[in-house]
Amino acid sequence: MSVKKKFKGLSDKAVAWLFIGPSVFLLLAINIYPLIYAIRMSFTNFYANKIGREPQFVGLKNYIKVLNKEAIWEKMQVTANFMFWTLLLQAVIGLGLALLLNRKFKGNELLTTLIVLPMMLSPAVVGVFWTYLYNPQVGLFNYVVNFFYDFGSFDMIGSSELAPWSIVIVDTWMWTPFTMLICLAGLRSVPNYLYEAAEVDRASKWQQFIYITLPSVLPFLLLALLFRGIENFKMFDMVVELTSGGPGSATELASINLKREAFEKWKTGYSSAFAVILFVTIFGFGNVYVKVMNKIKER
Amino acid sequence: MDTSRSYLEPSSFSKKLAATIIIVYTVITLIPISWMVMTSFKNVNSAISYPPEVLFDPSLEGYVNLFTNRSRQSQEYLDSLPAPETWYEELVRSREMVITGPSKFLGRYSNSMIIGFGSTFASVFLGALAAYAFSRFRVPLKDDLLFFILSTRMFPPIAVAVPIFIMYRKLGLGDTHLGMIILYTVVNLSLAVWLLKGFMDEIPKEYEEAAMIDGYSRLQAFFKVVLPQAMTGIAATAIFCMIFSWNEYAFAVLLTQFNAQTAPPFIPTIIGEGGLDWPAIGAGTTLFLLPVMIFTIILRKHLLRGITFGAVRK
Image (cartoon, rainbow over all chains, first blue to last red; front, side):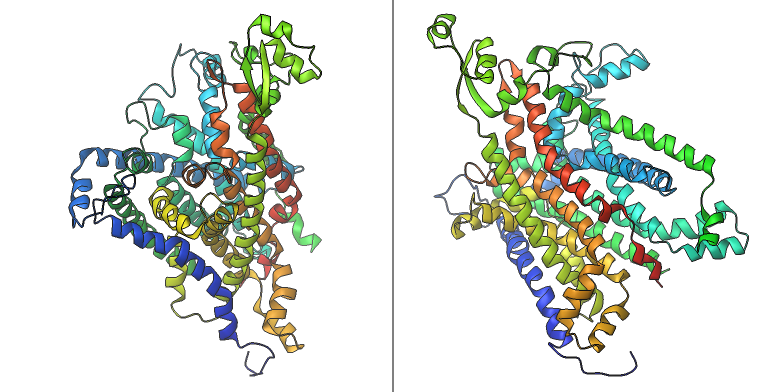
């Protein structure tokens, strides 16, 4: 506004702090303080189940232990594999569904609501229920697969080759609607006049898709993938209830291993160090990702 | 406007094709959920028959098992009891069991309700305030603050669970509803701020500036002009927050036990004789899904109508 005018009420600066303050305070108290606490514990040999014993400072010993443990790198690989396939499938299917739904055919509102249902479910409960669907003797999944092609008896959860796919399938089934919804919001925010102008310029449908639709929806898709990526890096509940990390450690994601160290073996110091390493990893990747995302948005 | 729409509208063939693909996808994606609901109405035997039974005699055994605790008794003992008074007692008796009392399901369920609605309201409200401030004002270190807010979502819950447990015990918040509401509010805040900021960015500044020239204060303009404009975004955000709180498992399983435990850690523990009681788990899942479904269907218009104010975007 070129004309300066004094408005009544609080100054903008006061309003800004009034609005941001409570959120920042809560995040500091319930997120950052425990984080600092965990970082402090990561330098000690603290065991949360041994209350009387004073924890001792052990320096970087926990970190060295974590990084030198080969099993940890296996868990990271399992996690990376899980993330790669779930994000790829959810981006492709989610964007595809959003593009189809954007054609505004009759009843698409109802269908969108129905498609969204799987992500409403509790991942832990979904995990339990899919053990039933995947059951090699009575499971519906096995029955349907064998109906189309007779593989004979197979065990999605019990075989170490199939188990990683069992969690990818369930996660994709559950969370594709998330990318779809966010992409749909992106598609609907594209102003019509862009397409009108393109039509006037005789741009083909394909050109409109490449030069208008895709760039408009990309920031939304990237945001959806960022949230899914973070969630899947921390994935715990669904997989715990579905495979509990097994068989062996075929689906033991990083955070499942973390829970074992922290709440079954009670190695609080060691597990805190592992948690900090996980956090730094995702924080680093997330930081780079957001920077790239903002660059794309600005273009 | 209507003349311009004619050539933007997809052809009827491409619409039909799109509709067909979407319907096929919808049917496939709904099979597991329908199967859960169907299983909840099976009896224990037909739930484990192969090939899976699509047609079956409906039974409420799953629901009875979900809401009661039972114990197996000898035939002589059952004979010595007076005749069952209710249909569900009769059902349980026919399995040579007696009802020993209500299960914990109802209590866990109402915990989920209280904690879910409480934290959704709080995180959307606080998130809307923060999102507005980030969207409109020059906040020092804005990008860093925004990234800080997002980064709080990156820490695995297991890692902060131990410190939060110790901290909550000191504050008397351990295993309480208030403690879980605060915790879920904070976890949802980052998503709320980020999603809502996107929606607020799309609302033209000119709207509230006009209101302020008319004599509204900044706060009045926010509550009377901006918030109603952002309803679509708020509804969508509320759905995501509600889903999270309603379904959260890791914190609930690690931080609550008796008083404030929610349904998700409880449902997997429903065990019948000789393994999991699938009809009862199906029943629990069905009842657990219901409120979120209703919530989504009520707010569907806001979620799906499309973000019309996107049209004003520069």
